[in-house]
Length: 97
Image 1: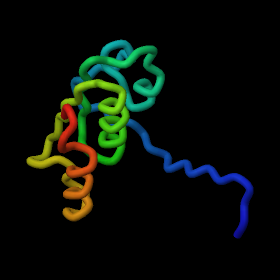
Image 2: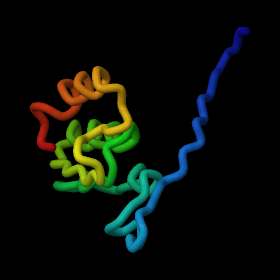
Image 3: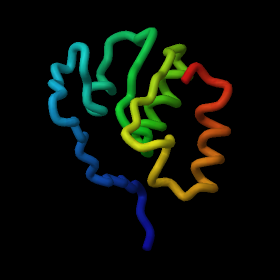
């Protein structure tokens, strides 16, 4: 196959935990977090999956402090352990997370 342009649309839908109200002013989904007008000093990210890691990478690069809120005992619980170790070394360690 050949193509001039390719779009990869994986179709992710933000998960909002029960009891959390999203107002896109103080509590955002990953969609709303892409439209912020300024960089926050501190961000809490619920979940440490791929999307959470991507957002932590962006926000720490922009100067925000990031806190992960994870229901499981460890960060990146669904990742292959070798990939999780590499991601922790490259994306978490030595950053304000």
